[in-house]
Length: 358
View 1 (cartoon, one colour):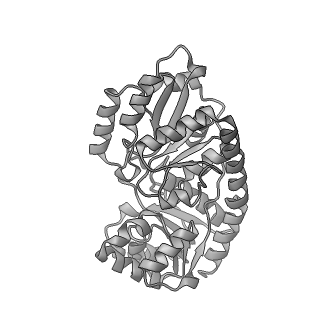
View 2 (tube, helix red, strand yellow; view 1 turned 60 degrees about the vertical axis):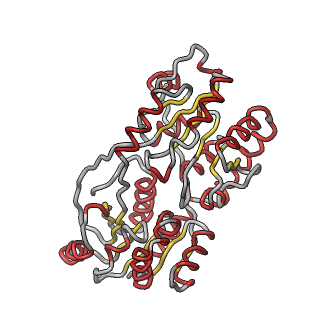
């Protein structure tokens, strides 16, 4: 198994694999970046006779690699494929071919399905909507004070700090520097407000082979070394903004549980697991107003949306001063996840879809 650990795509792929294997199948997880062409994947599948089907996350980067295989397959929209790649004609044509050949396609939201139907020649009946299932697990080993110290936050009043946690990989689509300047100005007015950016910046991989009857091919997220250097340099010279080392999923959930609010500043999202995990943990969410976020965050009901850095500060100040607002978005956010992001429903959907590949 070759994969990128501690990323949203990896978490999603592992969760779906668990659903598939709980139905009695064996599933091998492979990284799309391991393959240079559809022919390589076709050769892999033909060499391993137990393969009965395939499943790709991301219509272009992973889906295109399945065009030559001789077993049925399904695809899961990643977000940037429908939000960004579809604007490039060469990619759009390839994605139409993938969708035409796929047995089924999965969109995380109704909006994503509508966008796919608008920009791609597809049979609507082939695309089903299945929101991501959410499950959080909080590590008891995380020391909050040590976490902050290791991130560069020095304060004698740790419990008084209002920590805004920006959970994102250091990729341009996540726009990690979007709020840095305005947040630093706000921090200078009130030093108790700090922004901590946390997420993977390096690629790691391990390899393990096993026989399988179903395969999830997951795209590899190319983290940007130039952007990483830029973020590290900006953070070093910017007051009130810090960069934390990546943590395990359980430790990340523990940090989210202790922060004042979880922040999203992405340019594009399919469905942000970090937003939904924050809701499940009872932490308010401040999310950039883009279609993927607006599909899960209802402004002033399940979270707060902002369209500019200054509006982020304005909404954050409301969250600080209006306790009724905070309690409302926390309560409704948790209810929303429980009602619409059931792990049980997600498991049943993928088991049914994989059965349809036989």
